[in-house]
Image (cartoon, rainbow over all chains, first blue to last red):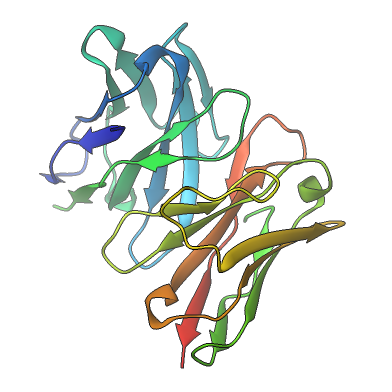
Length: 119
Length: 108
């Protein structure tokens, strides 16, 4: 059974750093892309970027380039989304999702990680 | 702003048929996938590719496409279909992925 299990909710202050995780299981972790998707409160889905654990190929949406870092540790089949300096506007639910190579749909999703940034 | 445009809200009477549309120039060249999101839950893939459904999705969900418009059709809508539906595809360059703004479906 394919599963993506995300780390728990976080409450941070502006300026702090954060790294959230997404552990994949039940499939070959290195042969599927992992995507990160943001959903701000009451808003729609926004694609942030994708990472291919097989060769560390990384692609970002222009809206998020330079704002976050996507990475993974294939030895523990875990992907990460990282901020160096959080802003209040980063408050959102963040989902990881699996993307088959060469295709454009997300077939399995994590349960989401709620990040709250407040002073 | 999204390169894929969806109507913000649509309603349908219980048991009737409803169509939810997604417009964008890139849809002339790439498949559209559709996701269902209920309150407090992660999105779920409903339709992908030409007209494929994950095994857990009922066959009342189907898609069609014409020009720059893709449509998700629910034939015989049920109360449990009430949700926000998002379309997704590639952008015009083909290099990036993009979501539509979402359509809130109300089943009356």
